[in-house]
Image (cartoon, rainbow, N blue to C red; front, side):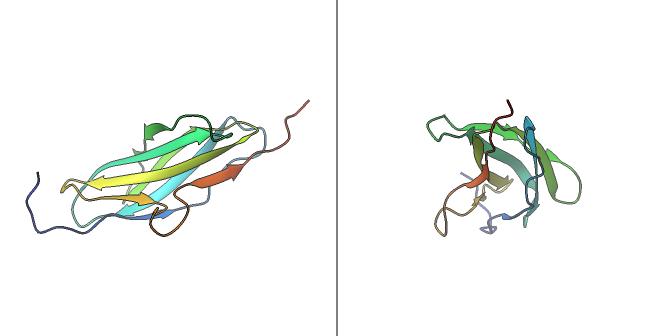
Length: 113
């Protein structure tokens, strides 16, 4: 157990995902602010339908509190959320499950024939 005076949770701001119909990957980018150093930033995702299991990847730092990654996507769509933890053990999810739906979605598209 960590003992310190920092109880401030990370603050996460997410940019809109970047992709187009037919892509196999969707680019996700976010910004994390912490009172102390960031320990880890992860993206959790699963393809739709929602019966699939959640999988996670480590987001890669891209400078000044920014993180990026690519998530696999299919024509059915994608569900995803983020988690950030600082070195003092404070963590946060985005979206905050106490305030809204605990994940975001990317809508699918009609498969190309």
